[in-house]
Amino acid sequence: MQDQIQDWLAQHGYAGGIVPMSPGFGETALWRVSSTDNASDLVLRMFPPGRDSAATREALAMRAAREHGLPVPAVVAGGTIEDRPVLLITFAPGEMVSDAITNAPERAAALGATLGELLGRLHAVPAPAGLAADDRWIAHGGPALEPLRARLRAVPNADRLMHLDYHPGNVLVDGESTCTIVDWANALPGPPHMDVARSRSLLEVVRLAGKFPEPILKALDAFADAMVTSHERVTGPDPHPELSRAWGWAMTTDDIAQHVGKPGSWVTPALVERLAATRDEIISKALDS
Image 1 (tube, rainbow, N blue to C red):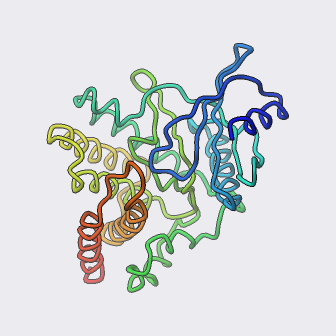
Image 2 (cartoon, helix red, strand yellow):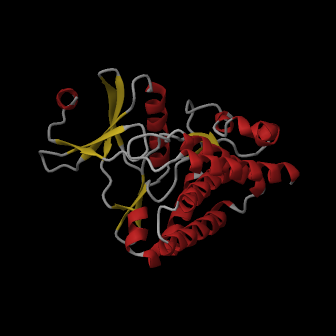
């Protein structure tokens, strides 16, 4: 595949070496494209075959966010390599916020405040035309949310741009405060506080999975609290916290379940069962609220 990538890059006027990058849990394959003319490096994102709509949606979301002044990589080119959609974007320097917190837990609250303000700014951006239907986000909660579907449809401001994978591994920090939001594969129109609930549920999954020692988990708790507080300063408090929490947990449970058995995955069937039980309890409380 590397030869085909090099050929595609050459056809688009880009020459230089390519080095594989870690894709994390995502479905896209990543390559860093080094420059031969002192220009900035680029990143090639390759989607699975048939995922043209996902690549188009990601490009739309990134361009919309960037046009509104958000720190997002620029989309340089797009196309197809061996039936796989690709996006060529600018390389974002820095380290993942998750690594910054691990290396310096005392920074967690300050980083959470920065990311919360940044997410609030993102939620002021109208979702671009053609991104997706305004109610598509509801389906990402899966069938467990069926009893809440009518209430979810009534949630206002469902035309905002949501990232839907906004966590410390998808924001890069360069220095003390310069951040870049990456990995827009999940972006959809939807209500702002659902996006926050999704972020919060991802952080809660990390605690349930027991991936980090207690000092790091406490730092992540401080990060999450500061992120939510800072976001509320921009957008206002969540008018339906129980509903948002139910949707966030439902989406995350379905999302995490897809990673059971994947190479390098720490997701186990027992963890998914625990997440599903927690989701069902949260949905039951939302129904009673």
